[in-house]
Image (cartoon, rainbow, N blue to C red):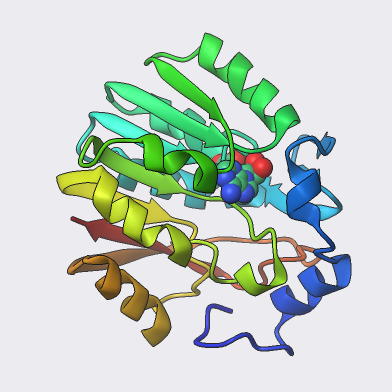
Length: 225
Ligand SMILES: C[S@@+](CC[C@H](N)C(=O)[O-])C[C@H]1O[C@@H](n2cnc3c(N)ncnc32)[C@H](O)[C@@H]1O
């Protein structure tokens, strides 16, 4: 799935193109979110599904490896947020762009073990207000809101991740890779300044009707500044 270029024959690409990206970014903030026990859909898109639980735990454990102040971008079903709070941290900052999901994040914050700071925004609109080198860990898991962001929405964040992390801070994210980094992926990490790049391969079992992932593994990046 994660490849050097869009592959118009690939399953994820076809699915998302068929659903359509017709100005969903303009509608996203106020769009009604459809929650079920196992999934979250916004603007008709399959944004998050419960089968990712094991992967989200892995990402949360990586992001909180140093404890301290953790930034999470994209709350979704709150799975990774719940795992972040199971580890010892100092503060949990969450940026979320959809109003209904943000309401869920508010409830989550009220019951959280460690203090949660919530920001209702697209990360692109608020991240420049955060100071350099203030974070110990970052978990980035958003969703492509334009066709040209499919497989690539995380690449746009790499420069900011590098700027925000303290030396030794850990960055992880939904990689869109099956079991290794593509050359293009490594190029974006290197251009942002990251040199310490490793990963874990996580076993997953997406259901046959999952519209965005059809592999039995997914890569969990461990990127250290
Ligand atoms: C895949 S879900 C996150 C799943 C989450 N990690 C979990 O464990 O449930 C993506 C979330 O990112 C939010 N989102 C999408 N684009 C965003 C952006 N540019 N800035 C902030 N949040 C965004 C969506 O509204 C959605 O709630």
